[in-house]
Length: 347
Ligand SMILES: NC(=O)c1ccc[n+]([C@@H]2O[C@H](COP(=O)([O-])OP(=O)(O)OC[C@H]3O[C@@H](n4cnc5c(N)ncnc54)[C@H](O)[C@@H]3O)[C@@H](O)[C@H]2O)c1
Ligand SMILES: [Zn+2]
Ligand SMILES: [Zn+2]
Image (spheres, rainbow, N blue to C red):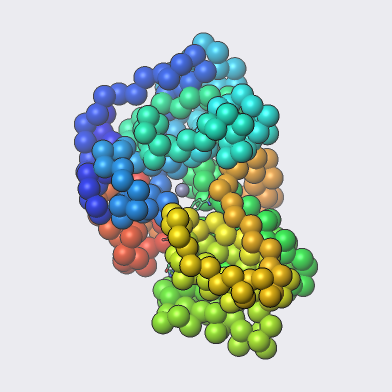
């Protein structure tokens, strides 16, 4: 079958690889129907983590083509969405839908952790399917289902852990797909204002159309914009959805005294410069989150079904898997008004 393989820094290729096989009696093989590229794939693409040869992709949905004898909740032919992260599947954390806190140190990521090939492929083997795959509810469309595999849970938990009170002011730093979804989820908690920071004009326009106040973050202007907009006070809750050293420092500057800062941007530095004095003197609370994806599905499916949450138009580009090299370049360089790319493995 064909799969997207990381072949070097900023290069991916479609390679013919062996068909996936069941990982064990609790696993399924999923024939992939849609698969997305994530900002987290870019950390591999940029070479921040050495992963040459990895089969990429942790956001995918498809149809069960084969099921192990111990799988109870899924049958061949079921359409499923799969958590991009999985754990041991057996501990209390995994049972509660939080593989990040897996007691057996079992957190693994499709298309990132060696030994767990990714979903930017025609098919993928999914271990522990009863815990980490969900039959796609009828009320959910395909694009929403793909969002439920990673970035909608991430945006939701980013907002939930930002401790937003009704009437407060929220700042969202970074308006990529994760930041845009975090912005929409922040609005569920009743803030009076959402300030939205990014250097890319079309992303600022999208945030404004969603009811946020856009602040152009070009040339380091983001934090000054937040302080201007709040008479020097800063935001009560700050969501960081970029992951750069600079934007993590910016989050502290943007925070009001007593604020909560919720970081979901991935930063792999072991020596991050951190504006400690400002953080300390403001008594901020800093929370960091890798998303406990399955734990959010019940609430998010209900919010999507009721229309209270409408993550529309996130996928701006629909390309065939064979165009993966172009798709990665477009997404990485923010070309052509892209927000997020969906790949079709059949073409
Ligand atoms: N914690 C989790 O569970 C989780 C899950 C998925 C993704 N992520 C991470 O979230 C981050 C965002 O992912 P994405 O898919 O939206 O990626 P993306 O690259 O599309 O978005 C990043 C955005 O940050 C903006 N940006 C760059 N510099 C900025 C600045 N100085 N001020 C404000 N904005 C700035 C970019 O213009 C872009 O819009 C990545 O680091 C990704 O790894 C985390
Ligand atoms: Zn992702
Ligand atoms: Zn576990």
